[in-house]
Image 1 (cartoon, rainbow, N blue to C red):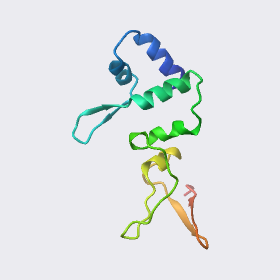
Image 2: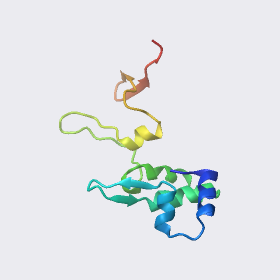
Image 3: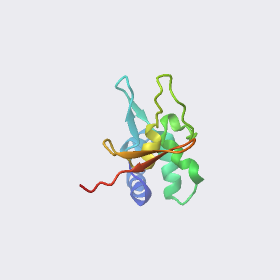
Image 4: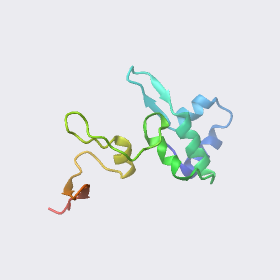
Amino acid sequence: MLTGSELLAKVKELGDVSKSDLVRACGYVSNKKSGGERLNFTAFYEALLEAKGVSLGETGVAGIGKGGRKLSYVATVQGNGNLLIGKAYTALLDLKAGDEFEIKLGRKQIRLSPTDDEG
């Protein structure tokens, strides 16, 4: 997905194309479970506004979540005892599969600290 000056340049380069083609060409596309294509217009327009210097505050980050929902920063223990931290949160921290954390327990809190990658 293009952002910033690259996004502005691409929009200018494409000129008078349909909105769907513009969103697709700038990379704001995801795949549906059914195999179809979903154009992410909201994320595209948020990135375009930000590239033009219009700040939407911290709500611009909300586009990471499914369907543009706002992150609640609340997690609930599941029925099997697991505590799930969703993809939107790990994406905010640029975490990748295999990243390791040390679990530190406090009186009523859990703290995750990245482990040293030195080997």
